[in-house]
Amino acid sequence: MSSTVTPLAPEARAAYGAYATFPRRRDVADLLTKQLGAMEAYASARRHVPAWNKAATQLKGAIVDVAIATAVRRGRRPLIRAAVAAVKNAIVGFETAYATSLPYDDQGRYSPAPGTEYPFSVSDIGHAAVQLLGPGWEAESVPWGVGASIEHRDETFGYLLLVDTDGDPMPQGDLYVADHSDNGNRTYLPDATPAAPLPSLAARVAATVRELQTRRTDRRSPCPGHSAGAPGPASNRPPRPEPKGLRPPSGRERRKTLPAGPLPGESNAGRPEGTT
Image (tube, rainbow, N blue to C red):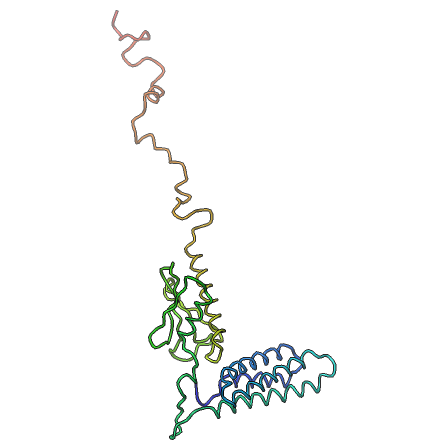
């Protein structure tokens, strides 16, 4: 997390600008409410700090004001003005709380106390996810807590929860689940950020694992109409007739192929010619 850019604030300011311009559009109000909700969750997780407690209260009030201004049909103008002002003050309060709560050492270097910048690790998300997945699921932390291996005791292959740290941030999010049964194919969790609360991230990971397990079952399922190990359609065909030229003819077949008259050298009475 950068120490010079307040998390979630740029997105909230963009949504605020759209709302201040088009306050009567519900989709714009919904987007702003979503951004303010993420900021409130971030601030509420740090309520033990007075600045964050004040910011969380301001954000909650701004969300309520936007909801009221959106729901009312008549006399909305003063309510919209109040909501716009409340949102602006809440965003500024969030940025102020972030700036004043950043710990710096005597030389001006950013030096947060352990567990304050990232209140939980990626492995914590994995352990919380298996609680939602139910019995039979287990999680094992990757060294240093940078990931988690999620497995079901009846499955041969498991899943790996990690963060993509290669190159620039991924547009679909950095947190992903890799399926070992599918050559480690990655499924990213869009919009997952460290600012999200642990229960929310755990629920998304659990849902992703369930979806991957369903895909895995579909890949193993046999073709419709055939059970596992059953012969295919070709084996149900009747045996092809053996060509007659590949085996000696039977007696009946030989009789059918004999000429109707007497054999050469025999009379009509069935005796050889020249005999009396």
